[in-house]
Image (cartoon, rainbow, N blue to C red; front, side, top):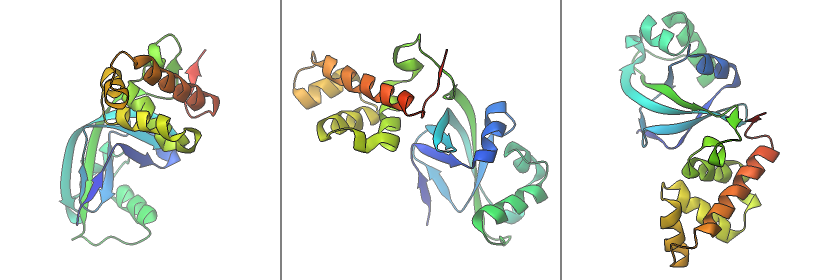
Length: 194
């Protein structure tokens, strides 16, 4: 039975630097994993670290993994990769077990955003998704609804029209986005460069 990857990928903290430096260009996951979206946010150490575009998904058996697969995942060899998979999944993997190799490229780092850009350079949908993931309880029901609609990829105008019946009430949606950004920065979830 496949597992579906939604809008977020979780990485162990020790892999974050490898990813941000470009050494890690893929993740190998046990089982058949099917991404639902091409762009996802990667989280590590309790924070979002970057947004990536999934460029390729390959399904293999453990016995078919190669040194090249290992290098894409930031390891020196297949043997090193298998050792790490055993540690992560808490079991020895049989050669017949399926793994998924998810390759990606970084679209945007989220560890040092610019205050000069509107919404710190993030798309409204990304601000909404991060706010819902980390701060859901900080928003009353009506504001959560706005964030949920934005998180689906709808424009500010579309959300205003859907929730208020009036597309000119975009100020309300923008206000919730500004509140979400402020809370994400104030709580240390997002870092703004000086």
